[in-house]
Image 1 (cartoon, rainbow, N blue to C red):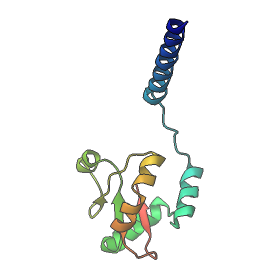
Image 2: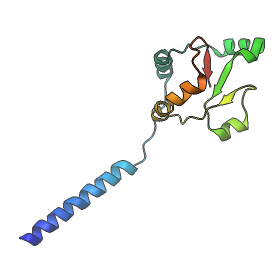
Image 3: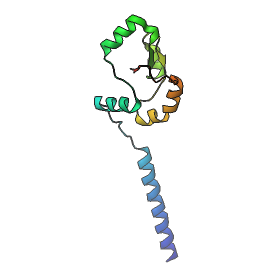
Image 4: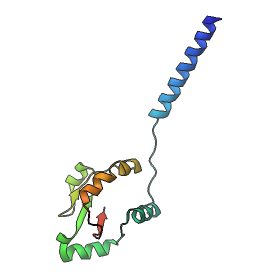
Length: 119
C-alpha cells in the first residue's frame, strides 16, 4: 500500500514538472502590432502621431530641434539611421516596453511638450 502511494506521488510530481516545463519553454509567436495598437499606445502615453511627410519637413527645416529616438537593436542602428537619431534599443514586445518605460522616461527627460517620433 505504501509503495503504491509513493509511486503515485512520484508520478504526479513528474507530470507536474513536465507540464510546467512545457508551459514555460514553448515557443510563443508575438502578436503583430496593428495601426490601432500604435494609436492606442500613443494616446495612452500622451504622444502625438505625425505623418512621414511632416517629419520630413521638420527634419529638413531644423533637424536639431527634433529628438529622434531609434528603438531598433544596436546592430540595426549601426547599419543605418537618420543623422542625429539616438539609439534606445527595445525589443518589439509589450513586456519589453513595459519593463523599459521608466528608463525611457529618464532618457527623454521631463519635457512633455516635445514631439517624440519613434521609428
